[in-house]
Image (tube, rainbow, N blue to C red; front, side, top):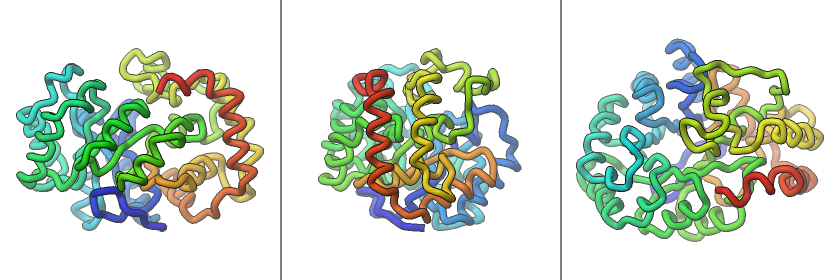
Length: 325
């Protein structure tokens, strides 16, 4: 698999990674055996970067990833912190960071975490010098090798990129969320900050497998967070109204090259964007993990497909989401 430098971490990672939210919670039940099989299949297919968080299944995702990295040394594992408390800027202190860090290090079974990201904190956190001083202290203490941020908005991303020691920015980027292409990716490239593209399939919409009759379980955020009831609505279907998203995906399918699935097309589109370090699709089973990784081996998309994505976005999606994130 093609390797790219992950910003200021100094590490190279495969351009397709794996997001481990599905293996923890909020996507319906995934057994531990299925989760380990998914992780193993991804690594066998060339994945070297895994993204998790301390709140995915209250640590379950981290604990399952720990079992993998014992058997597969050399992987890069990123986790996130900050969502275990009420979302008040005052909670982002060195004392809390150490507590959260201790828990994640125990869950993952390591002394030093490869990359720790603030997990979509309140907007004022990105402008608080003391927060980044605390993160620098964590690096000095050997608790973490590098730190980054996971953001909801492009403005938050740009604020973080201006910080001298931020190694990476994780942001929603997919064929239904194009705003990061305008300023965030160019700014990250210029600063040497890595871009981790999350929600690349728009919560599965861009798999092309859903229709008006698709249902989701009560424990699936695509059911309980349709309108942002539990967390930012942009995390669910990228904030796009479900019916509009279905219409957009059907329009996009005409541009999918022969021999490629709609999901692989969506992933390849992200890989083709200058400045992207790694894309982190989730997977619930080994088949999905292998199919996602295969997108890295596909040829770059033709100009017609790239312009087609832009046209569909401009016509159907831009009015709904562009001004919001």
